[in-house]
Length: 178
Image 1 (cartoon, rainbow, N blue to C red):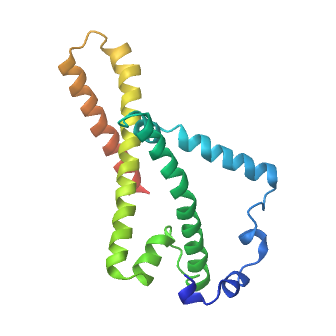
Image 2 (image 1 turned 45 degrees about the horizontal axis):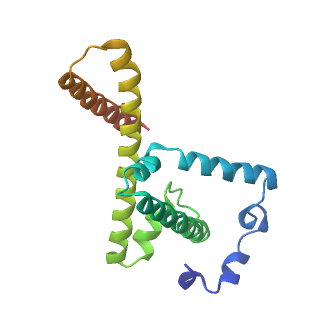
């Protein structure tokens, strides 16, 4: 980023302190509340908890949680800097994802491919985790308890797979429609 923008001081001088460079723009309590909300929301999702439950042992789960805790802030800071860079150098682009556009325009193609592949993998893993969580809740709460409490294991497996496909198709429809 600074390779194309010059010294960091020059880069940051292009943005007014309010609201761009002040992490407490909306006030301390509001920003702390937002941070706490993100923390609780992130750690309580099925995707995050499933990784902890599926760990080999408690040590592996702890190591994975600590690794993600150390990796998430630098990635967030890098994405923020990329967003600021793209706002400064490509203000006409109203791209929903400045990281992808930055990667395509400024990163070496080999490294860019790795970055875009990682973004795609992250997207697919997030969608898969959310689909699995929603399918599990609907299947256990409605189908198994209310609709077919006496269903065989084969019928339960078929209905769960059908529900996963239905939710995935619905998500694809909404994503493509918007």
